[in-house]
Image: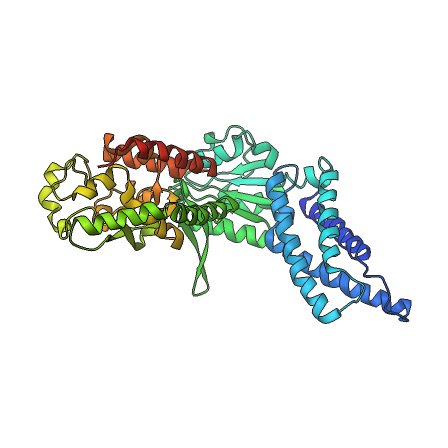
Length: 459
């Protein structure tokens, strides 16, 4: 059985050979004019040392060798791209500005380096360098539902080789009938030493004491064993966990929003392009609506209202004015006539609406100025409708998750719910969108929105 440390060292050496080959193919061995062979060797060695050092530091920092191509190809490839981009960028900048080799093409280094590193990973799939590297020896600390779930899942045995478990003092060992108990929490040091583990999966319950958990951490640290911590208070859905620092102290950052991904960047690109095209294409309609509002009632053309955006941030939402000036102050007087339950407010045949305003609302034309909000980044083309602050104050804890993403011009509710569903169902539709979001869903909702608008179901 290969040890994980030896396998990762061998993988690093193979990658360093790839970097040497890439540098040679890119011209690092070519001597300067009449320079001696020793001078050429010195320059080649300097470049190899530079790229090799940056690669070793970068892969260590990113954990490139902790993920095998065989176990998780997409993540392994992403780590490879990140590590090589950092190495090529940092080492290449130093090489170009300091070493200044005239025959070395830094762009060929980029091409050959990535090609060779990728080729090696594809060739070695299924070999000990990838198969064994994907199965570190793991000792489970704790006998909890979380520990059982981690060790009995369909992918569990593919990801790790479980050598046993050690229950905390208050745990029921019967929770882990599929693993062998290899010691007690009172002798955690001996259990760690006897297991020859690479990593400890620490899965305490609410009954486990903080002192026991700290002792496990100290013992793993002294034994040089990695720690994967699964505290029970993180058994919540829709939470992302990351690290944060405050005055050099580490902590956990819990968020319901996801990281910036390529898909989210594409979503923002679609927003910018869509809003720009929409404003230009609908400019005659926008001008006609503005003129209609100005000529049919006194007051400004646009209605500016404070709305709550992503993460509770307040922004100014733009709409064409569809009500008489001062109508907002009469809203609470008409609350009893609202057909929308909950904190939202909807009235059919609202007496405050102007004649042109009723037409604009029927076909959602009053919301066209929000394309400007989309363009500046306050809103998205697709997302939950932005609520007003007084509505958000009345949200229950689970309803607040609808403001965890950027609000939009249209969403599931606008297309299939509109004024026919309760506020609870409205929020559930928004949460369905948040939990199942994809670019394809956005495109479908945009297409269905045109159908809903033409039906004239707005009030």
